[in-house]
Length: 119
Image (tube, rainbow, N blue to C red):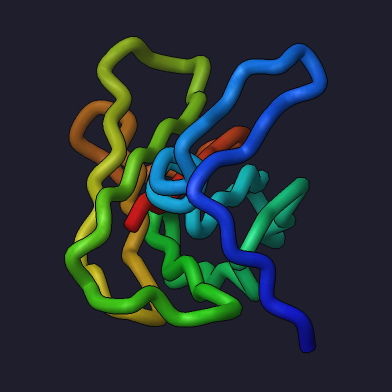
């Protein structure tokens, strides 16, 4: 295996980007999925599977573990039946994160859900 070491990257247009920005500024995992019926991953990076634990209750499993559990997670969902929808993330571990979806006071399955992890 080869190793490439550099401090900056250049684009074809000639601008440069510090390697720290590239390494620390990109998502370490992300997923877009359908949470209704049988959970279906539409597109993903570093997400091996999603466990459906009941209505609006999911565990996202990472293919490659995070360095530690102190990462940042950003999530969104789309349930078009109500304006009082919310997402809650919990139980951050190096290999999984819990993803909860609420519509009003009840848990609900989203047709469109997304999660991105930054570490």
